[in-house]
Image (tube, rainbow over all chains, first blue to last red):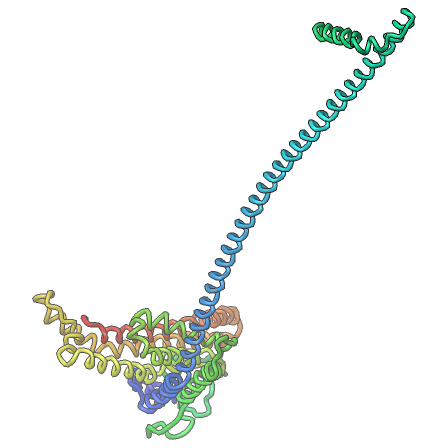
Length: 181
Length: 273
């Protein structure tokens, strides 16, 4: 029964009519939150967010700079490498040319020396032949004169020397040999 | 019941089904609190909702104080969480509706509003408190009033006296003959109904949510007798489910409240209504 009375009394309270003390406390509670956040805490975090953004952007800039540097170093290195290759090729070419020239020179020198030796040999042989030939001629003349002298019985040496018969004979022989050759 | 100062729980605990007593259904009385201090008739008193409101403020300020007092460029865990919440409101609500340039100076207000409303709603499922402060019309009303005053003054400041009326009545010559009617409706809708719906939307959601939770909680207890125990189990499961649902609704309503606030501010700042 008492419960019913209380319920009846409460029904007069409209839940859409705001009680004033709650309004006041609600406002105070909200102002506390708004005050702290707007006065200190949100400016604090905004500053840090801004710093962070700058730090990140700074980091990105640094990374970009490093990348550009790396790129330029790479290009430099590539250029150097290409130059070195070129130089190496040039040196090789030069060495080949020099080698070829050297070989040609040495070959020419060898040829020259060979010819010299051959010429010297020929001259020697010719000289020897001439010497042998003249010595032979003298000996043959002498032998022939002696032989003839023995046959004749007297020395023909002086006569033969004066008339130069043997020499003439030998010259004829030589001419014949020359002609036969 | 609530007239009894010694009554701590929201319902009588010695009543079960088949015991000959009726179901102690939740009702308006579930939203009335005896003063903890002072006299209920004199308008000078202090009760549970006020305590929760002030406690809620302290919780929010304490949380952000701990997170943002000495913020670091490389954030700790707490700062990271607080930043996520802050950024969600700033980017997701304020910049989205008002725009970055104009919206920047309203960010503190909107952030405060969101976390305040959310905290007040959250009390609904926090053990021992278990009452959404916003289910008392005064709290949504005072917030809606703050927004309303801001909106009206901004519109005046931006558009002048005639511009203000053009703005709130949606003055548009192309409407022709229906213009007077449209203006009347718009005037009524914007200037008179809007603050009311703004407050009541939040209030009614929290009011209904709390009633639902109460209903299933009371039923779980009330049905604990004989065959009723089986139904009590179902009711208890519903209590858990509804608690989870309320958790979602609380955040959603706080979001809706600040989103509408931003829409109003944006409307006040807009060149043409």
